[in-house]
Length: 490
Image 1 (cartoon, one colour):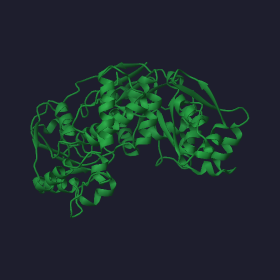
Image 2 (cartoon, one colour):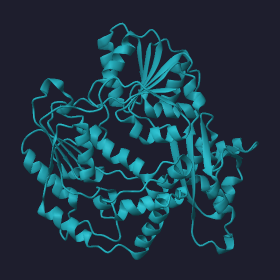
Image 3 (cartoon, helix red, strand yellow):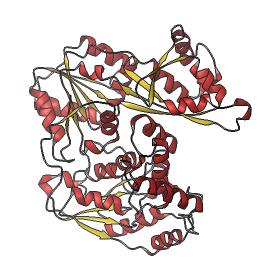
Image 4 (cartoon, helix red, strand yellow):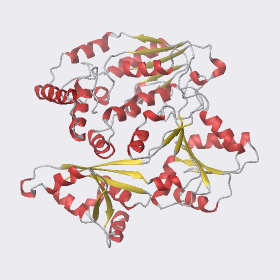
């Protein structure tokens, strides 16, 4: 049973947990998403209890291998609290690290214990890959994958580079086999994907075919700990929760406080009713044009309008790295847990982080997680995390006006749900309205219209679509009908 606390961002989950750790008599491994946060929480722990033995292990704190240092510390530590990063812990699992039975595990912010694998390969590569593998039926839709007896040493040599095979030059192939070799994880391949490859006639093959797989931590690894607690606002809407829940993990809600913020004087500004996506951001949809004849996209005018309203006041921004040059204010792209900006009253969020379709297929095929669930965390929930880095979390400055600028209504609606006393403002900028209106008139391909109609007629009749078919329907809705309701695959 895994405990989680999904109290709203900024209410004090992390601080409350650190106070408990400062007084606890039991050893705890405390994991955070970044090195900066590890340093910050180490200082806070030592302020809370100057006599507490705290060991911090991350890339800046050790010479040589961080993973090696972490593993050694776990096996021989006398420290009351060991602070490290999500990444270091996950790498330690590949070394077969166990011996956790003396520890509690505390995880600050949602952490993925899974990996989606999407391999676009030819039948010949498939035959080579499967020559190293055993497939055992795990359930009606999946095989579990292991390395064949006598092949492990060869696979390890190929991954290490001491033996060479062109196939193992690809990073996604290396990732796949690394997880298959891991004693801490189980890797699954959908049966229909395997059967599809077996049926391919190599003589007639003209293009690559997608092989999906998914790896997830073994429940026995987490069961070694005396307790496991996850601190993450809206955890039950996260990709990690959906994957682990569908994989059979059980959870217990121990939330310490409210999930909403009653603060007033919050103003949420948005600019378009359609969902803000990577295709709109980068103008990568072949059927539409999201840039005007000056080469400017929606984000350019959102930033321009927001900055004109903010003026000389302090502000922070969140955007994809290729657009950082548009800002003259601090850009915060790793916002989890940072408290450096809790006196800043203005925030602009124009980022978009859509998963690619191959990754979506893998997560859907193996773990039953759909695009809408993945996209919501990566775009909408991350926007909320960013906005909560501002003065909005500072209870001593609750009378100061806060202005949050986001691109689309979906993000604005979610922020309004988190801040029920906020005022939502639909901004109108001529250049943005022109770009959106031009794309509304874009003709949707006839094949797309027919596919939507057919699949929705099945769903409305109570027919459950296969994962791949439903994923295609969700892709169509997000791409061409972003304002319409997606029918659930019940």
